Length: 286
Ligand code: SAM
Image (cartoon, rainbow, N blue to C red; front, top):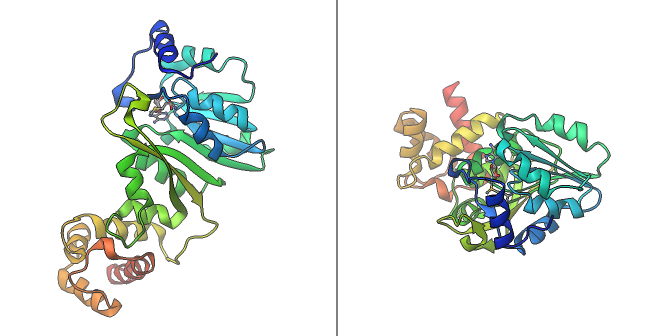
């Protein structure tokens, strides 16, 4: 069933009795040009694609025509009759109704993509859990090549910023540890039903074969990163002291040892510096 324009989708969802749930971040694509463009970045005929939140299946259909197989994970069972109709006849698509944050994605990949040359993730993410979903995908160390996702424009700017630059945040460094992030294209809020308050952007995360820095304890490294950015308007010393409950004088000594200015802010720290800082803080806390 063709569902690539606003009126078709609106009429179809109304007829199916579907009611949008704001709490699940349900803003469906109604601009027929966006999903095909996104799907192009998800791989080709040898690729197994995991889609998160298929909604009414607009992106799923595009992925299905390009990829070898698509496994779509949707939390809202009310979309079952909708997806049964929109994905009818597409025999390389399977929808699993579950919360992606509680789903064993390793098992899904093993069970469905063993004959695929590569595996990718492609999704128009529910905005209320963008970061948890991305970090969960990365931290689970799935055998995936890339993640192509639509996120709020502001989140895209943060994620794709250079670590050590003004726009960087904890999420920039955390994602950079696992992947190379780049913006792909802008999507205006008018491309969705219902229309959200903010614009979006599609970004691509290319998974690194190895992290760009060496850390002895990944979890502690992420704790350090979060601590550096906890109080964005304050110096990193204040921010770390507040987050990790460490005396400011001790942090000053560590900064002196690493050649970091006392008044520096977390956003100026490179990945290498964050790694060194993490090792020193860990040594102190042991
Ligand atoms: N892919 C569709 C599109 O582009 O039109 C829908 C995108 S909509 C922004 C986000 C989708 O994610 C919704 O279908 C929503 O029900 C689903 N969703 C929300 N939370 C989820 C979760 N925890 N696990 C899986 N799907 C979820």
